[in-house]
Image (cartoon, rainbow, N blue to C red; front, side, top):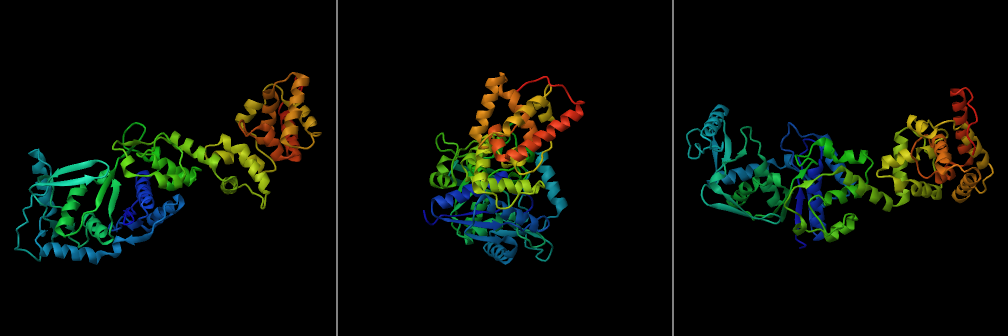
Length: 479
């Protein structure tokens, strides 16, 4: 289907949230799978709420995720004349009419319908009115009142709507600005959109838009309405549960390909496979595999997926991103660090990390001259009197040659055999002193990456602090 043309049409009135990003992703994957075109359209007719900042957030979010558009971005605010022309055509053909009802009259109409337990719809009282062409008015669509509208949804199957339930929606406001449903129909037709893939919160708009297509003599595109995304409690996803914006995921230390992978799995599946490359998603994606039931957002699953991608990613790319995070934290990352050393940093920390932030936490000690020992590390590592252990380990490390993981591990093994002290009793005080943290990459890898001089300096500093804090301490442990 090389003639496939899809569009993503966000409104720049807020953040690019999870549901919007997934819609963009499914549109993009569908287009790429079929060799089609992905069109980006900014629906900014609500000038009071649309902002340039929100547009920039949308563009930045899509670019970060790698969801590139083939055409656009097009802005509805620059297409007003096209919508006015369509309104005129509908008026001339008798498919639209001017409505002179005041807000008070509309509210009274609504209250009466509710009192009579009827759906609150406009009753069409101005359909035949011709007596006040110069009075303030809106323009309404003369929706069909009989028969049914059948939508062949590519996900939900055939859906039938009773035309008697449709209202005469406003096409043009009293100030002359067009409304959503009219703009969407004109844009999709003129941009030759073949498939409208969007959230099922738009499902009620579909029969209205189909009627507009018919009234304008336009071809109706294929529709596919995606299931909702719910929170863990099976209720509407909150900003706290799903992040307010896609850019928040970047700030959480997630990789874009991991976010794409996870969002693709919200409502779509391919067997039991969980981890996909972007290329695999393009190759395997189909609307037939999109479920009808709402998808449930699971932050733990997203973090797991990110951890899997982190382990499989290019080490130097990941370390580069970690170093950017360290720089944001105020750590001066030296320039031109050896690639072999940086790859070793990745190897030491990637297995234990789910995010770039967690990785930065683990490896920050490798990029600084000194460390600040966190309270948890002191509590866990400095039990009893750790000074003798630290001094004996430091004395042994002075003679380790070469100062590499295997030789360091052999030195610890020799101390354990000679003294009967278990590895934890040796490693935890050293970990606290050298990294400042209770949890870190393997102690042998850390010592090699920190280097002999910095390791001994940090151990000495910890010993000095412990002696001052304990009045010198007594040698009650052997190592």
